[in-house]
Amino acid sequence: MTDVKPPVPRRERLRAATQDELVAAARELLVAGGVDAVTLRSIAGQLGMTAPAIYRYFDSREALLNTLVDSLYDELADYLLTVRDAAQSLTDRFVLTSRAFREWALAHRAEFGLLFGAPVPGVGHAATEGGKDTDRGMRFARVWLDLFIELAESNNRPMTWRRPISAALNSQITDYVNSIGGVVSVEVALLYLSCWERLYGAVCTETFGHLAFAVDDGAELFEDQLLDVAERLGL
Amino acid sequence: MTDVKPPVPRRERLRAATQDELVAAARELLVAGGVDAVTLRSIAGQLGMTAPAIYRYFDSREALLNTLVDSLYDELADYLLTVRDAAQSLTDRFVLTSRAFREWALAHRAEFGLLFGAPVPGVGHAATEGGKDTDRGMRFARVWLDLFIELAESNNRPMTWRRPISAALNSQITDYVNSIGGVVSVEVALLYLSCWERLYGAVCTETFGHLAFAVDDGAELFEDQLLDVAERLGL
DNA sequence: CGCGTTGGTGAACGTTGTTCACTCCAGCGG
DNA sequence: CCGCTGGAGTGAACAACGTTCACCAACGCG
Image (cartoon, chains in turn red, cyan, brown, yellow):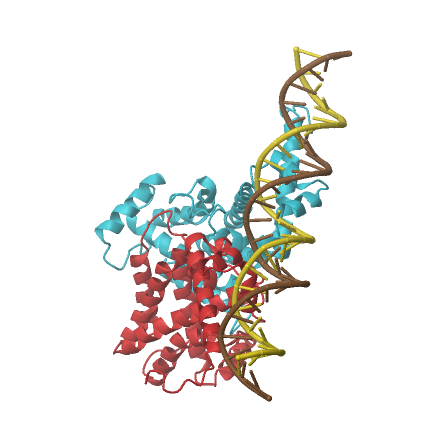
């Protein structure tokens, strides 16, 4: 079970390894000194080589940062999925996952800022990626989306949208629902988006420090938002 | 009424004028190409001078950016105040001001990102400014805070917090309330913070493009949030 | 008139991302 | 075992960046 069958030609394994080391070093520099501190020479220095060597692994600094973004999305999604799937009741799955999202953001402010902060031209944001996202954010989006599918299937909940839905919005949401396989209704998709907007917004506000002028721990404010959302979802 | 009394020694006026031109040029570059495009040489070039000349007006690029941030906060606060104070009913003042915030953000994405995006070490974020903010964000914060004071004074509204308030939170909120003159109760301050978290969050989500994977106009989602907040405030 | 403060320049330094010519060694075929 | 090919890594170099310095020109005051 250890290395009976090495179909990977060793050379590529080493290559992949240093590639991973490079993004790991980049991440260290990011948390230590912000995105401006993640310098090709510093990255290279951390594994004892020089800057131009990086170009054997990435086309540019930007490409390296994009890979870092990808890996962070993956890490976050993995973490949230383990939390989500460890919980028993639907309510717990929703509440604990949402709390975990906030806690990951606060424990990894720099990374969160890179993933979800103001989009910088060049740094591959899920959003700036040509309108529709690549599969980068897909896994992440699925974390809550699955919960809403489950929520809709156990249908004795009040899954309604309270306002008139314009034709334009309806068509866009329909397109979106189709793009993910048509597994939910338009109303549930709207609830999903609204819920995401609210959770992300609360986490964003606190993580970026826009509550710090009054309070240094937004936990109770977040709990209130969460309670409110859960109520609206009938949880 | 034109220039009967010029107590400003002309020299300082010119100085202030080019200083303003510099931050205006910086802003243009910001919206054109993101914060990385705002280069000392480019700024200087736009008013026909060379980069070192800027140091006669600002200590560093960072200082210039901070001044830009200040001026943007001022512009935004001015705009919101005119909208707010033009409205008649309290409900209108709240709703129209909130809509105006979203619209300013969408019409000035780059500037909004600089003001409210992920804090960059160095760029004087209201938040990173040593915990408590300077008077920079103060005027801005007052925009909604005044509405909540008004809301509390016309007291036949349900101004209650629905969850237990921990001693730690209570003490922090009390400190904050005192720091602004003790004009509101702890519960109203909490409602204010919760409301701010929600509005900022919604605007942030949309402006940073984290709704774009499904919809390209978040207006109706925002209206739903706004309706919800207004209901909770008894408007 | 003279003279100092102020605004502006050009050259320069150190650091950044990136390119290029070059070396070097691992791993393969004969 | 030799020879070679190709990938990994280096050092020098370039342009652009923020910043500093010595210098200069011009305006306004006494």
